[in-house]
Amino acid sequence: MPSLLEVTGLARHYGGRPALLGVDLTLERGGVLGLLGPNGAGKTTCLQLLSGNLAPSAGRVRICGIDLVRCPIKAKRHLGYLPERPPLYPEMRVDEYLELCARLHRVPSGQVAAAVRRVKSRCALEDVGQRLLAKVSRGYRQRLGLAQAIIHEPDLVILDEPTEGLDPEQIREVRLLIRELAAHCGVILSSHILPEVQAVCTQVLILRNGRPVHQGPLVPQQELHRSGTFRVRLDRPPPAQQLLRLPAVATALAGEDGSLRINLAPGLPPSALARALVEGGWGLRELTPERTDLERIYFETLGLELRGPEAAVAEGGVP
Amino acid sequence: MILTLARREWRAGLLTPLGWVMLAGSQAILAWTFLQTLERYTGLEASKRVVGLTLELSLNLWGLAAALTLLSAPLLAARMFAGERHEGSASLLGAAPISLAELVLGKYLGLAGLLTLVCLLPPLMALTVAGAAELDPGLLAAATLGLWLATLMFAAVGLFASTLSAQPGVALVAAYAILILFSVVGEAKKVLEPATSLFDWLSWNEHLLWFLVGAVRLSDLAYYLLFSTLFLALTHRRLANRRLA
Image 1 (cartoon, helix red, strand yellow):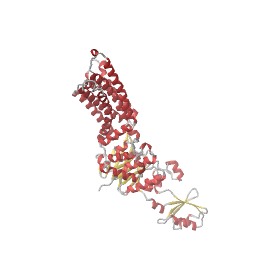
Image 2: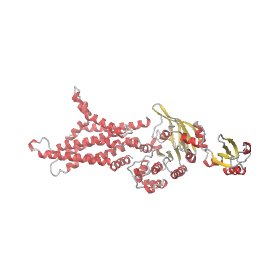
Image 3: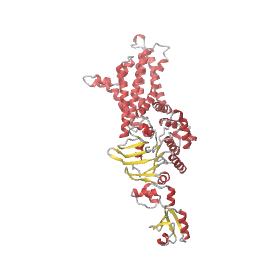
Image 4: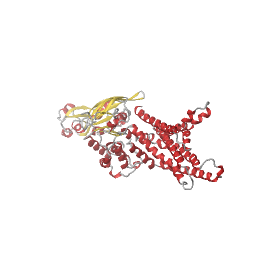
């Protein structure tokens, strides 16, 4: 049984300049790959190559074992793609547009109406069927982009910044949809929003200047909460040795700003740490989860100094 | 798939004002010329008439319709590839399981369908005097065929130019440049000595003239089909290269 997606030595040059070099990755059904990197890192080029919109200068892309360059039509039947800008025709109505997308993705004629109904329900588009695409809001445009990418129930869904321009509620809905999709297909998404990638992805690929600089699985968010790092402020901080004797504390380091970095002992919930600190009578003022695993990996990989969250916002646009 | 794409282009042409403005403008100009031709013809004394009404209409009305489709084809074609790239909808077609040949033929068919409406305006107008005057249906059929073939060639040129840029304006200028070159190339014989028939042969209007006088020649049919196919092949090549470039 071939992998859902196999990419080997993928490269793309513009003129003589390499935009992407040496990307190797494998994705199985149920996997969600997050593609990260600063602006201009090659994320969109990578997704355009994987979606068949661009031809690679070198390397091979196989979708369900089918070579995307040699047999593009067969391979693209398994593919759904939401580009950075949702590909809409402003003069069409929502229903007409989705019907066209179904036909373009070779949904059999008898099943087009059912496919349109199903995808409208999944993407919460039931109320706008007769609306002109030129008149729909940014959120609906993004949902329509998602709808066209999944209308034919592809095995691999490629999403370029799927939550761009959405409000928090819509972002939550898209996350749920991605999780739902991942139950029976593979998803690749690019995003600037690290918590979003952390929330939905099972693996991550970080690009910098067109080259992969980190690739690997992601620790699920729930586990991060159980074994994460916390920033602690106390009115009367005790010596480090005394803190280390607490069962909830694995390691404790004094920070430059007077706070403490405490690593929670594996298997214990954050509430155990909070309880121990209160019972110690040191005047607990602050107990904040530190950066997630992904944020740490991202900033370390890109060689950016790990400071406070405000600094990160200024540097990388990460909220 | 080709029909799905053609239908979309056809509908897009008729749902946006551009298609209707083009049709209405063409009809107004052609109707004016039609009435002028009739008036000039009926106002002359019989002895001064050099040619019949059918030929008068064919040369004036059908000839003008060819000039109108020459202007309209690039306008409609510019939004097909250049416009889609500009709007960002090209990636929908790029990721769909569609071959480039299907894509080119689908768009071409849709464009040809829209322009065929303009080609039908002169024969429909001629029908209005069919009961009052003796017209030569064979000559008008030949003129309509010539007009339609020339229009198909303009559409192919427009489609090719549309692949040259992501800016519809640039595509439009490129299409007009190619079509004007094909229009004036026949004039080269006036400045080049000795006169060569190659320039005559390259000029689309020289071939159309034979259709307008009622002569359907294989060489003229071959010219239009050859150049339409050539520009469609170039469109295909250009799209394939763009994925690689």
